[in-house]
Image (cartoon, rainbow, N blue to C red; front, side):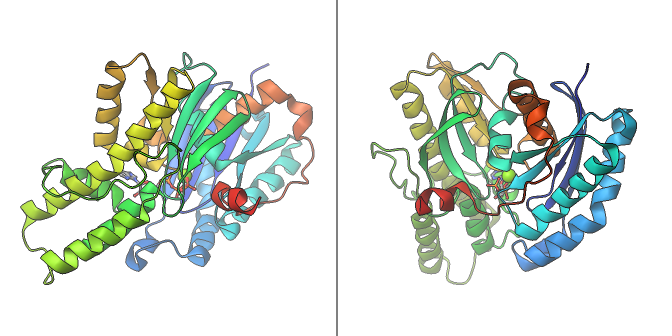
Length: 344
Ligand SMILES: Nc1ncnc2c1ncn2[C@@H]1O[C@H](COP(=O)(O)OP(=O)(O)OP(=O)(O)O)[C@@H](O)[C@H]1O
Ligand SMILES: [Mg+2]
C-alpha cells in the first residue's frame, strides 16, 4: 500500500505543508512570514500567531495541489524539534488533532535531520554512508551518516551559524532580513578578492567552525573605512563578495577534509545557506577535482520546507515501521543540537 503522508513544518518563520507519496513529493507549499522584516529578526510571539493564522490554509492548499483527499492520508509527519517553542506547538498540535480525527499515526521529525536527508529527495543514488554539511540560519555542522538514523556530529559552529553570519553582516550593511539571499545577489557582481576577511579555524584539525570573529572583523572594517556608510554600489558588491568568499572557503575546506579523512565519497550539503549560488558553484567545481559525489537539494528544499519533513517521515516508516508512531505522547523540544551538545 502507498504511504500518503501529510507533512507540516512550523519551526521558525515558514509555515509549510507537503504531501509525499512513498518517496515522491506531490506538493510542497511554503508561506514565509514577512512580518519580521521590520524588526531585523524573528519575533517568536509574532511567529506563533502567524503560523496559527496560516496553517489550515497552507495544509488545504498542499492537499489540493497534490490531488489527494484527507481520507487518503496514511500518516502525518511534523517537525517537533528544534525551533521556537510556540511555533513548534502550532504545527504539532494541528498534526495531533488531525491525526486523532483521521485515526492515523503522527511521526515526530527532527528539523535538522530533515535538512540532512533533504539531499536524498531527488538523488536516490546517494547511498549510505555519506558526509552531510548542514548550513542554515541556526546551525553549521558536519555529520558522518553511516546508516539511517546513525548520524555522528564531527563538528559544529562554536558561536554563530553561517546563515546567522550572513544575516548579521547583511544587517550592518543595511540589507534587511534575511540578508543571505541579498548578499548572494550583490556578490555576483563583486570581486571576492577585494577585501580579506578572516577564515577562522580553517586549518585546525577539528571540524568546528566559528563565524563571530568574521562578524566583528567586518564591523571594525566598516567603522574604520566607511564611518559615514557605503554610498558606492560597487564597493558594497565587493564587500558582499569578499564576506561570502570568507564563509564559503572555510565550509568547503572542512567539508572535503572530512570526506577525505573518513574516506567517504558521497556528500550532502543542505539547509538555507546551501541555496547560495557561489557555494553551489564552488562545490560543483571542487567535486570535479576529487573522487566524490556532491548532492544538493533543489532550491525549494534548501530553505525550511515540509517536503523534507515528509520525506524523512517516509524513511522513518520504511526503516522503523508504522507501529513506532501510534502514540501521540510526544512533545516539542526547542533546544538546538548545539545546546544539546554543550550541555551533555
Ligand atoms: N542564497 C543564500 N545565500 C546565503 N544565505 C542564504 C541564502 N538563502 C538563504 N540563506 C540563509 O539561510 C538561512 C535560513 O535557512 P533555514 O531556513 O534553513 O534556517 P533556519 O530554519 O532558521 O535554521 P535551522 O535550520 O538551523 O533551524 C538564513 O540565515 C538565510 O540568510
Ligand atoms: Mg532550517
